[in-house]
Length: 293
Ligand code: G1P
Image (cartoon, rainbow, N blue to C red; front, side):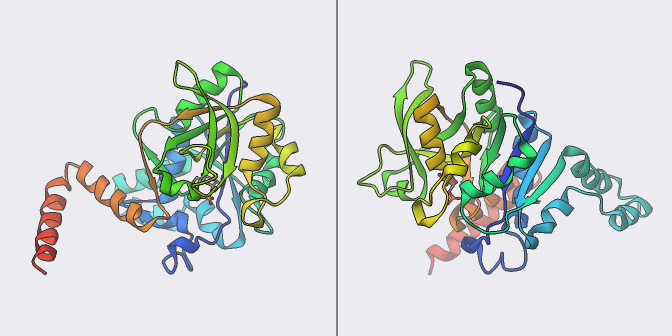
């Protein structure tokens, strides 16, 4: 497989899980610790060697493109007041990636969103990331997938085991696990009930795909929830050409899930040497206060 240069990140959704916080602020711009959600996702792509980011977007989401562009009045103030560290922080965001965007004019599903990027991606292999999934750890996530996709010359998707009671929230795969842990996919189902799920291996929003997926998406019929699902197109492609799944290392947080959203904030605070002790003490005090009630 050729080098993967572009990542497609669908961001047009309304973020209903994060309402009312996401009513006027895109859910991808909500902060986790000291950065917006989207920055963690883009940083994972950069760690995997990708510098071209394609947002599949809507008219409410221009803040995402602006975030990775210059903010000259702000930079001017930071320069004049000698806040050089902060100046570097905001300028580094601009240097980090080149952003391209395409509008998803109608919300017809995740697969439809990926198809909207066809004219930008053209005939090259590319990555797809779900903007809600944050995967933390060295050499985890997309980087793992790209290494395997290039070695094996096949599309690769990231999976993680989930509790069987949670399968209805994910695309679920079935397949044969090789001795190196990589799974040769035999079937994929979007958000099955626990009774119909072929396993508890869930797709976690990281994909390395070949451009032929666009042909399958173009032929795609509405699936789960009446939407054009990427999982259905992948299932058809996997059956025709073969596809691999890789159990992704690292820790995953779903930024659209309130408990995960709160936990990942605490996780970063406990990891930050400057904040760790204070956060620990604050948590202990809160736990004590609530255990007394
Ligand atoms: C999408 C995919 C699903 C995958 C999930 C991972 O669903 O359709 O297969 O498991 O991302 O986050 P969504 O969360 O957009 O409903």
